[in-house]
Every structure is written in C-alpha cells, then in structure tokens.
Amino acid sequence: MQCSVVIPTYQRPALLERVLDALALQTLEPHEFEIIVCDDAGSSVTREVVDRWRGTHDVAISYITGATPTRGPAAMRNAGWRIARGDVIAFTDDDAIPDRDWLRQGVLALGADAADAASGRIVVPLPDDPTDYERHVARLERSDFVTANCFCRRRVLECVRGFDARFRVACREDSDLLFKLIEYGFEVVYAINAVVVHPVRPAGHCSIHPRSRSWASLRGSS
Image (tube, rainbow, N blue to C red; front, side, top):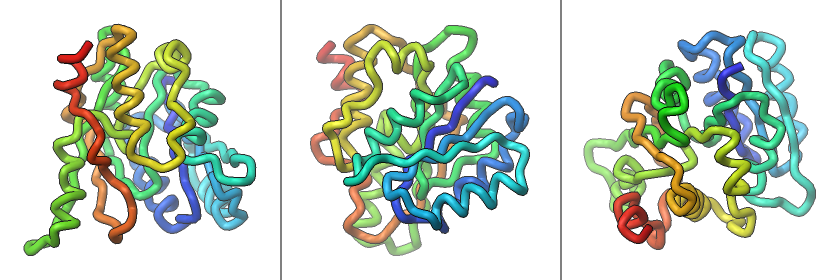
C-alpha cells in the first residue's frame, strides 16, 4: 500500500460522501491506497456513510472517532495518520474535491525519497461577480501549504510529532506543520499537478488565517 488518505470531518455527511466518491475515481489502483475518516463528532450518520460506501467500493476505508468533547481537526488528523498503513500520508478535507489524478501525482512528487513532503495545488471556483468573502477564500489558490491538499511521509510526521493539537480550530495547524518541516530540514516540494478543488462554503468557516506565514517567509527565517 503506497498511500493513506486522512480526512477529518465534523457533521457534514453529504460533503464527506462527495469527497469519498471523488477518491473512488482515482487513477491510483484501489489496492494501492486506503482512506481513514476521522469523525470528530462521533456521528452515527457519518458512520453510516462510511459503512455504505465501503459496501460498494474496492478501496479500503476505516472509520475512527474522537473522544467527547470534540478535539479539533489537528488532533483528528494525528489520530488518522498514526493508524495509517501507507508510507505516504495524504491529507484533504471533507469539503474538498480531489482531482482524479490527485493521489498519483502527489506520490510522484515525493519520488523515491526525493522529497519528504509536498503541497498540492488548490483550485477555488468563483462566480462571475464574487463577493469580498469569496475573493478572500480564493487566496487558498496562492497558499503554500494547506491541509486540504498536502502529502507527508509517515517517518517525517513521526519525527516532527505531527500536527500541534493545541490548534482546536482549522487554519493554523498547516502553517505550523510547514514551519516544523523546514526547521527540521525536510525537503518540501510543490506538486502542481496534484489538484484539489475547494468550493467556497458559507461565511463563518475559516479557510485561511491572517497570521499564516508564506512558504518563502518561512524559508527566509530558517
């Protein structure tokens, strides 16, 4: 098994089913990857989505849940990669839509130990007349490292101890992980052909935090 896909989720079963269906269409062979759904709500509806999906697809899929109260996406991502069987861990979100060639391109970007981690390309579809909020979310396309589309070798995550679970709200843990990867001297590459579509969700969801630091600034400070 080459790759494990870790997806944190919280009370969004319909969106989760959409990302799972996108993963079912991957060009990577079904036996070459697994999916780990990390449900921070412990929802019976979400578990039913996973069980139903498992019954109609060849890709191995696991369901895990966090303790009450909710632990946050960083903690759930950690729980997912720690039980993963793949040498490469791919992270995406329950509201994202991976391209058919996403996993294969991410694995190719890492190569045969040529790189330790990779950041894929985010595409944010916008209407013809976007609002200021929608334009703000579209900044994800220019972000350097986001958990909706990134790949790390398992040994690398073990070395840096994964995500900082003190970040209970999404948007900060990805910049923090990138900082640790660079601080430890790991090679992070840009996988331009590993594409994830990230539709704009209603205002109130944090997609990019103003304190997040760019890849270039992190490299400059190392």
